[in-house]
Every structure is written in structure tokens, then in C-alpha cells.
Image (cartoon, rainbow, N blue to C red; front, top):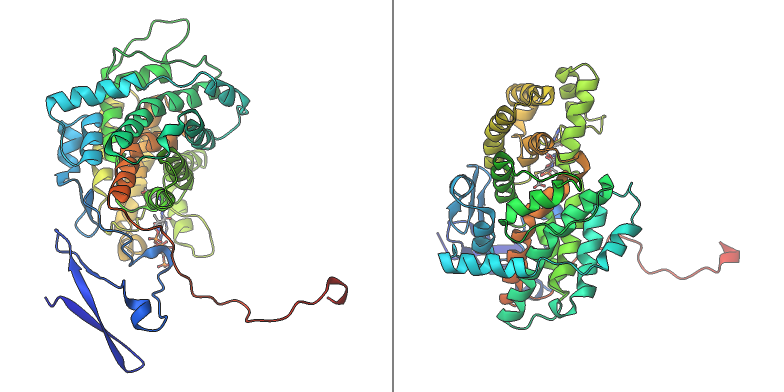
Length: 428
Ligand code: CMC
């Protein structure tokens, strides 16, 4: 393949370099476009064709249904690795050695206390507050309690900010849940593994001895790994663009959490469960909801279906469908919602509308069913997604800073009024 491409505008030819990635994807480098063409820009709503950066973290082939973190397939990592190993891999580029793994875990544990004044902020939220609003605010508030995390000018500063947030975020997640449930806020147990401790902090009752359930530990570990990164999605792009102004890590993460909240992104896991519940309440007629999803005059969409990049099975959904069966079986739970989900999936996969548009189940289609089986309330599902995505956001933020990327600042094509003069209010 040639290493340049030519664009002709008003009869004048302009040449641009073609850049090839390690997986042979090709990009046109249009850095010089505006200067060379006297002000012409590209227009790409939703960035469907625009690469915002070069990245060495996650590879995704939406046509083939491939997802790899730093070269390792998601299937292999979900089966063999634990969440903190995957976090280290994403953030620092390689799987940790035994010593690095131990140090990483210990450094995170050493940072797992949250300033007790943060309780006062938690207390100030009404019980009705959505957990995503709480967790995004608390993450931002962490900056005030850890001001040194803002100016990260060395690898050491960066490492400290990384272990701080990985240590404190699970505490905030558990406090968000416990506040909603009216339970006392807890700090967990430093002796436990990372994921074990998350479950204990979430579920320990003040009047009972906590008994660890290994099925839940393994399941949560897998869920967190599957959510850990997904290259330049809406929330990750938000983290990178906020961080590109040199805002601190915690402020950038808080913005990413807000972006994740929406039902077209991470909020879909809550929306899927609510949709399945509604179908069940309505008598389980999946055909009725399929028809609604296809009706262009009806705003209803089949939540948990479709993806901007995957035009084939989302590999995470494949793993989670199997996991849902296993977990519910192991926990002895029979959930009619799982049957409705399977029925809906079968119908959609055979339906011309969905086939033509290449709409397959995505990661959110089965995750909510598993979270529900684990005893996690529906409005906490997206918080669990954020907990999993944390290492990915951190890795992408760190890469952006280390690559010294310029501040993110897109252009626009102005289509508003041309110059006009002001009319005083009495004359309008
Ligand atoms: N139900 C019904 N129709 C759909 C759906 C759906 N879930 N998703 C897409 N379509 C249709 C859409 O109406 C359009 O049809 P037409 O070509 O006739 O206008 C076509 O498929 C293409 O859709 P699009 O909205 O242009 O695609 P997009 O890439 O902009 O949006 C999406 C991707 C994920 C926002 C969208 O598929 C969607 O809204 N899905 C439901 C929400 C969801 O499950 N989100 C979770 C995404 S995965 C987790 C994550 O990474 O956040």
C-alpha cells in the first residue's frame, strides 16, 4: 500500500501521509489539512471515522469480535488472570512479576483509607440520589483531600496517584451502596484480596459475621476484568480530553464517570434490567418489544443491543452469557429474567432488522442479570461498571500524559447567523 493519499479540493491536490498500526489498521494523518487547504476541516459527528490518538493499550476488531488488552485476548485474561494483574497490565504495559504484583497490591492497600471527613459528604446526599451522581462527586472530592494528585510531573507522582485512587475508589463504591441501604460505612479488611475486600465492604452486616462466597469473588473478578478497558469509548475519551487540559487524575476520572452514566453507554446495564423487568410485568411478550424497537416512531430501543464498533458478537457478551448460566446455577437461583433475555436474544439474532444493522448483544445485556444474582441493586450496576473501567481510564490518562498529547480542542462548522447588529429590548 502507498504511504500517502491525495485529496483534491477545488482542483488542487493535497497529499497526506497514511499511517499503519501494528494490526494493519490504516489512518490518514490530516495534521496539515487546515494549513495546506486554507481552512478546510473534516466533519465527523460522533467521531465515527476519527481516530483521536495513537494508543498501545487495547485492540478491538469490531468486525471479527476481537478484544485484547496489551495483546492478550479478553477470553484468556478472564479465565486466567485476576483483576489487579489486569489493572497493572493495562496501566504499565506488561503483566507484573510476582514481586511487582505484591508491591502493587500492598501499595494499594496502604492507600485504602479515605479521609473520614468524606463521610460528611456522603451523609449530605439524600438516600434517593442516584449512585452514579454520588460516586462521581466523591471521586472529584478526593482531589480536595489529596491535592498532590493534581500536579503529576514525574513517574513517582503518577504511581502515587494511581495506587491512591485504586485503594480509595472501592471504599467509595461500598459507601455509596451502604448509604442507600442505611448501613454503617465500613473500611473492609486489609488482610483480604482486592476483590474479596470489595465484596466484604459492600455486604458486611453490622450484626453478623461476614462469610466469603468464592463464587461471588470469582464472578466479580471476571466482570471487572471484562469491563476494564475498551479503547476510545465515550467515557474514556472524556477522561483523556479532560486530562489533556492537565486537570488532575481524580477530576478527569470524575468526568469519565459522568459520561459513563448515560443509558447509551454504561447506564445501559441498568436500563437492560429495567427493560427485562418491564417485559416480565407486561406478561413476557418479547415480540411486542421487538416490534417497538423496530418502530421508528417509537423511541424504545432494545437496550443491551448494538454497538458503535462491534458489528459482530461482543466477545464480552459471549463470556457473560455463559457466566450468567453458571453463576445462577451455582447460586441455585432461577430467574425468569434470564429466560426472557435469552428469548429476546434468539429473536433478535433471527430478525431481519437486527441482522441487517448488525445489532448483537453487547456487554451490558447479561451483566445486569449477574449483578442482580449477586445481590447488587439495579441502580448500582453502572457504579460496578465504573469500578471495572477504573484501570482502563487510568491507563489511557497516563498514556495521554506520557505521550505529551496536546489539549483536546475540536473544530466546528459554524451554521448559525452571520453578523448582525443588536436591537435594544424596547424595539424587539
Ligand atoms: N434497538 C433498536 N435499534 C437499534 C439499536 C437498538 N438497541 N441500536 C441501534 N439501532 C438501529 C438505529 O436505530 C439505526 O437504525 P437506522 O439505520 O434505521 O437509522 C441503526 O441501528 C444504527 O444505530 P446508531 O444509533 O446509528 O448506531 P450508533 O453506533 O450511533 O449507536 C449504540 C450505538 C450502542 C448507542 C446503539 O446501538 C444503542 O443505543 N444501543 C442501546 C444502548 C446500549 O445497549 N448501549 C450499551 C453500549 S455497550 C457498553 C458500552 O460500551 O457502553
